[in-house]
Image (cartoon, rainbow, N blue to C red; front, side, top):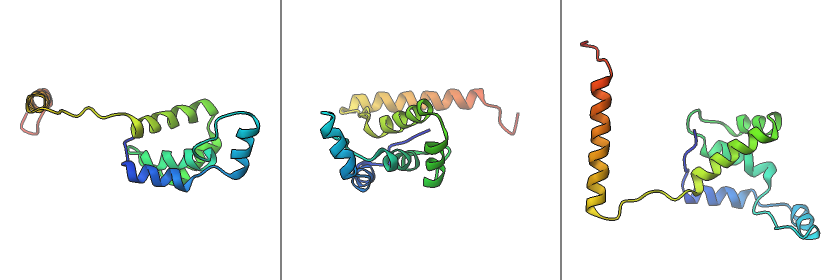
Length: 120
């Protein structure tokens, strides 16, 4: 599971993992978009930064990047990136906030009624 580490942490990672001059030059020569980051460092960095359950160290994430298949790594990376870039649903009115609070309370009540307790 991934979570948004926050804009400052994400931006710091992007800055730390800037593309190499060689990567920029290769993109320009291929008439391609210049990358925003070096995938060799940014992908494992983001996996570690955004991981939540389980939490990954950079070494764990680097091992995943090095050893797993391209499709699996891309799926993990895209999920982590989406967690960082996806717009949150923020209630802007009191009515919206009240509806969300009531919905959460109902879910908690339902879960409490369905789960056995020590006294059961």
